[in-house]
Image 1 (cartoon, rainbow, N blue to C red):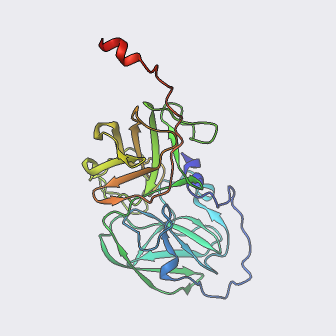
Image 2 (cartoon, helix red, strand yellow):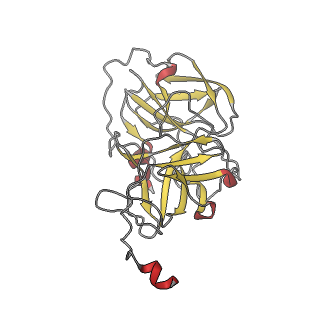
Image 3 (cartoon, rainbow, N blue to C red):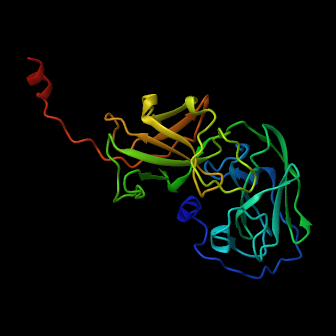
Length: 281
């Protein structure tokens, strides 16, 4: 599960690099428009327990990943070694996943509720601007594995769905996303989940493939991902009617994940054209 977050952050380094920041005396630079939902890449699409990213300049004094700096910790750090950076949302310190001079990834504290929220990033006692965002009850997005492709894996082997590894209609797959909303057991700020925990709005979850909604009973689980703070997962069985590489979207109530991501699914094997006639005559 440690590699999951690296998959979610494809632009991030796979190792810790401590590099001196020549602009150490400069204040962090970012704006409301550069505070984004990590999955959809959209501003204004944040929710409690959502993975968010701040893009800008002078954000961190080092490039550091939580998974490399504190791989065995049960709590998310509010600062990373050598980075000198922290993020507060409505006065609460947020858990940090990754920091670099150009990007900082954090989890919106799950105790917060929908409504206005103030975000400020501080590096080495220098505050960036305080920006205000509007938190939603849910701001669902899917995490991309590669450009245009959803992050997903086969449930039986846990192999990632890639160009050489596709799922087939009728098989169970796992999708990953963020911003999906409240859990049955409320998530706690900084605590890394260690078990499955279903969405509070589980009955409102739907999967849409190629514009067609799958049968609700095909969704086997929707909720937290153990070991991956802020990342949700959905396990579902692909319908037999799934076409090859369909667009995939997840709906939670009336909120849909971003369009344009496809799921790697192989074409169903062709059926004999007169098979049904033979059985019905």
